[in-house]
Length: 142
Image (cartoon, rainbow, N blue to C red; front, side):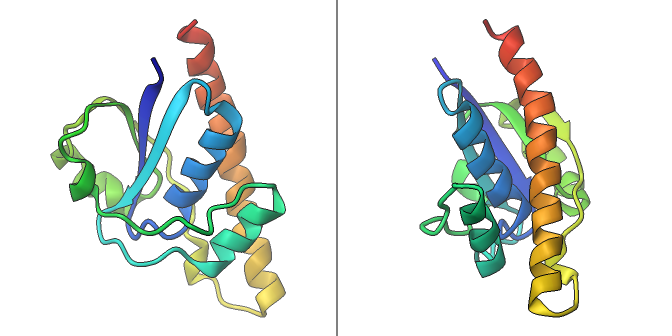
C-alpha cells in the first residue's frame, strides 16, 4: 500500500505543486502525492513551464484547499512554506509532519527569463530535498 503525502503551501500555486509532481515522478510507485493551499489561488504558468522542462506535466493541476483533504489520513503532511507551517498545527490529518521552507519565486521581479530562472532554482531545490528526504524514507519502508 502506498504512503499518502500532502504538500501544503500558502496558495498551492508553485512550491506544493512542484513537490507533488516531483514526488509522483520519482517515487510514484511508493507514494501517493497530493498538494493543497491554505489560501488556494491558481497554478502559476511559470510553474507549469519549468516542470515541463524536466518532463513533468502538471498542466491539468489546479489549486486546492486543505479543506478538501481534512478527512483523509496522510502518512506525511509536508509544509513547504512558513505561512502554511503557522496554520498546519490545525491540520491534524497526518501521522508525521515535516516542514521544509522554500523561497516563493512568485514574488521575484525581473525580466521573464530571470523569473523563469528563479522558478528553476526553487524547483531544483525541491527536487534535491525530495530525493534526500523521501529517498531515505523509501528505504525505511521496505
